[in-house]
Image 1 (cartoon, rainbow, N blue to C red):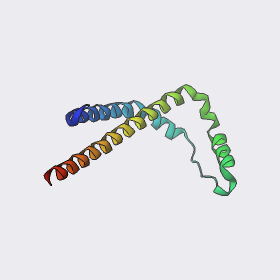
Image 2 (cartoon, helix red, strand yellow; image 1 turned 180 degrees about the vertical axis):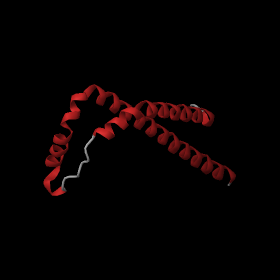
Image 3 (cartoon, rainbow, N blue to C red; image 1 turned 120 degrees about the vertical axis):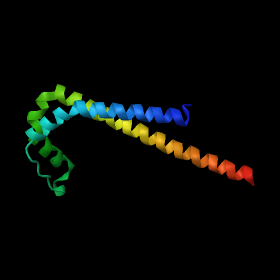
Image 4 (tube, rainbow, N blue to C red; image 1 turned 30 degrees about the vertical axis):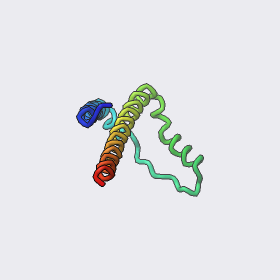
Length: 109
């Protein structure tokens, strides 16, 4: 596998990619935020379907920009996947450390 040094390089590369993606997405997000009307959350008692329709009606005009939405959602997917990968690498590293600690204890006794 990559080893500890390799994992560090992978994480560093992933974080640089996230920073680049966020810089690329910032102008879109600022424009979207400025253009969106304030949205009041529908009441839960109306149910999931009615809540979805309420959001759909309020955001209908933005669906005409599907190319923009596809690009920005892809950016969010990439950032989310990278964050998930980094978290998995971190967890697997901790598990590996715990196992090596257990082996050291077993061998020492």
